[in-house]
Structures are given as structure tokens and as C-alpha cells.
Amino acid sequence: KIDELGGRGIRSLAVAKFENDRWEMLGLLTFLDPPRPDTKDTIEKAMELGVDVKMITGDQKIIAIETSRMLGLGTHVETTTNLPALNEDGTVPKEIPADVAQHIIEADGFAEVFPEHKFMIVEILKRQGFSCGMTGDGVNDAPALKKANVGIAVSGATDAARAAADIVLTNEGLSVVVDAIYVSRRIFQRVKSFINYRVAATLQLLVFFFIAVLALHPNKFNDKYEEDFFKMPVIMLMLITVLNDGTLISIGYDNVRPSSRPEKWNLKVLFIISIVLGSIACASSLLLLYLCLDSGSDGSLFQKMGLPEMPYGKIIAIMYLKVSVSDFLTLFSARTVGFFFTQKPAAVLLIAASCSLILSTIVACVWPSGESDGVPVEGLARGDYKLMAVWVWLYCLAWWAIQDTAKVVAYKLIFKFNIFNARSGAFVNVRETNDVADATPAARASIALVEQKLLEQKIDAARKAVLLEQEKGGDNKKYDELLKQLDNTKEDYKQQFADARADDEPTARASVSRMAMRRNSRPLTSDVEQGGNAIDGLNNAVDKEHMSHGIVTKIEGVTQQANKAEDTL
Image (tube, helix red, strand yellow):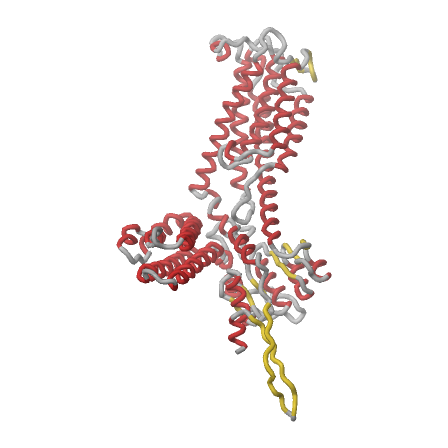
């Protein structure tokens, strides 16, 4: 009876009395402690963000399995039997067998645990390189909360749990944890944009002035230029830096899209993109400087365009405006993976950049004629020809388009050929590992684990919807066919996930898995055989005209998740 109640998630307490020198059973007291209504939705959202969720409880295994099933976590719940014993001093053993770590990763939860087991599970996961979060409310949770990368004390937690945690929730429920994930990933994206831009801008300035000083000597282009080498007044460099930094501060409020996977650094990819952005901006600046210095030569580009010869003072103002505008425009390219217009910037960033661009243009136009730090400078709006600032702007915009296109192409090539594991490394949930081939056995076991769980959840939900509809009556043959197709789809993908984790050639995995999916699927109807894979067969098995909207919606959910899973593989 107790097992029957436990299988329904009901706890039971036996009541007996001692009478006439023996115990007499009086009955059972039962009580139900169901999860909060929002817990299942919170867990599913966390898993959709690539976070693997495990339940650790002191309840009996049979109750834990039912609770885990209700929450959509799966039914692979283990006890502490396979966990190693603590040392005599209460510490976790230094050497943990690889199969123990893999056992922890693959389990959906643990039951009948004591406080030391919670601490041990967190410690083992961290040793394998995983970022581990822990929620709890009691004194017995405090050691694990302290050990985790992020300890979260829920509402109503004890003082000990609150003191050990990094985050204390003041309202009931865990949905705010998902909000925290979104916020942290937005912060990461903004920091990445900041670094990407800062490296690109620094490369542009340093390399440009280095080459300009060494290679482009003004007096060799035109006898009217007395300077031996190109240089810019310090006040102009300070203006560029101050305005750039002022604009860069606003990137902390930029609109960004949080990643669907846990974030980690891939600095090689970051530096490649920064070099692409910085090198094009630098090349365009060097080219403009050359064209300006050569403006007095016969047959120069300036003469062909009908532009006058540039005095050296105006060349300085031109280069100040060019470097300033290029820097600000590079910021908008550095913040996106696609073209700059694919992601709307925040109003704060747009206003800050606009103000800086306008101010830089005004300064370049009205700079008084004379010398600054021994360098002749003349505003672009002074003298007879006053439209040079317009030409500089058009030049910068044209090169910005080239720069942004080169960035998009670079990203496409990096992701297509998986350069520096830019694509495959994202699916290893280990902070310091980007190379799937070099991943530890435990890290390899984590590959696509969340996607597999989500897919199985959606298949189980669709199967339940079919069974409920079948009970109402109808074409049993059609329903049986759909049930078999769901089961086959689940098994096909389960095998694909297992093969992916055992594969030693991560760069070939995407194409190989797609071909294997088409070869190994077990279709049931002629439509499925012609379709060539399990998902096509599943869609073909759904009669949208005669089946309920609920079944169709569930199958569409399975299809979407299966497509995500195949992309992951």
C-alpha cells in the first residue's frame, strides 16, 4: 500500500499503538506535498536555455520518481548507492572515477540523499568543469549552496541557507531564476560587444598611426608640405578617446538577444572578428590619408573627381573626422553577428553615438586655422571649398558597408567550417572546454543531453494526447500508426544522441548525423519511406483534417524540437 501511494507521489506515515506487549497497526496517515504550479514551466524554460536540471531530495525513490515525472525531468532517478563515500574528515575524495561523474550527469535526479551527498554531487560536477547552481531552503542545504557556483536560497529559507547563498529570493517560486539567466546572458553579450569594439578600435588607431608615421611622409608627396612625417595634435587624439569612451558607456544599456545556450568565452573567434573590423577601418584610413597627400599630383583621384588640392591643415582635420566617424560606426558593427540593421540599438546608445558623431563633425569643420602642438590645422568649413566633410562622411559610410559585410562573411565562414569550434563548442556545457574532441568523458556525456530530454518530453506529451483522443473513439488504426511512429522517432533520436557522444570527429558530425537519420529511420507507411526520415514520417502520419487540434499542436512541437536536436547533433 505504501508503495502504491508512493507511486502516486503521496507520502505516508504508519500509526500504531503498543498494547498487550505487542504493536498493533492502526492505519496510515497520508499527505501530499505537490510542486508549485509554476515549477514545471520554470524547469522547461531553463532546459530550453540549455540548463540541465536535476532534482535532489531526501524522499524515497518511488516518490522522487513520480515527482520528477510530474515536473518533466524524466524518471531516471538514482539513490546514493553509486556515490563514493566521504573521507573521514568529511571531504570529497580527490580521485573520482569517470563512471561516477558520468552517472551523475546522466541521472535526472537523486533520492534518499543526506546533506553530504548534496555537497558531493555539486563538488563532483564542479570538478568536471560544469558551472553548477543549487537551490535550497534548509540548514542541510547550506554546504551545497556555499559550494555551488551560484547558490540560490528560496523564499522562506532558513538563516543558514540565506547566509550560504549568493542569491536570496524574496517571493515564492523559482521563475525568477529564469529571469536571472536572461539578464546574465544579456550582460555577457554587452561585455562581448564592448571587448569586440575595443579591440577593433585599438587596432585601427595603433596600426594606422604606426604605418602612417613610418611610411607616409608628407614632404615626399608635395613640396608645400613641410612635415617629415604624419602626426595629429594631442588634443584631437584626446577628443577621439573621450567621445569614444563616452559613447561606449551606453553599450551597457544596449538591446541584445540572450543566447539560447549557456555562454562561455571563445576568445579566438572574438579576436578574429575584431581583427576583421579593425583592419578594414585601418586600411580605409590609410587609403584616405594617401589620397589626401597625393591630391596635388597630376592625375590624382581628387583631380579626377573635381576636388581641390588639400592644404596640410585640412588633411589633419579630414583624418580626425575619418578616424572619429569610423570608430563610432565600427561600434554598430561590433554589436551584431549579422548586418548592423538586424538588431535595433537601444535609444541610449543611438543618442550617445549621434551626439558624438555630430560633435566630431562640428569640431572638424570649425577648427580654427593655426597650429596645435606644432601641427598646422584648418577646419573643413574654412576656406573656399566647404563640402569636404560631406565627402568624408560618404567615404566612411561606403567603407562601413564593406566592413559590415566582411564581418558577416567572416562569421558565416567561422560557423560553417566550425573554426575554433565556434559552433560545436557551444554544446559542451563545460566552462573551459570548446573542443568536443578534447572534452572529458563527463563533458562528452553532457553533449545534447538537454535537447534529448526536451525531445523525449515532447514526444511523451504527444503520445499522451494521442492516447486520450483514442479513448474517445475513432480510427484506431490511424492512432496506432501515430503511436508507433512516435516511439520509433524517440528511439531513432536516442540512438543518434548516443552516437554523437561517442563520435570522435565533431567537425563531421552535422552532415553525418543527417545522413544517418535518413538511413536509419524505421518508417511505417509508404509516405514515410518516400520522406526518408522519422520527422517527415511523423508529419505524414498526422491527418490534420480528422485529428484534434491538440494532437496536431503536440506533433508540431515534437517536430520543432527534433529539428533543434538535429541541428545540435
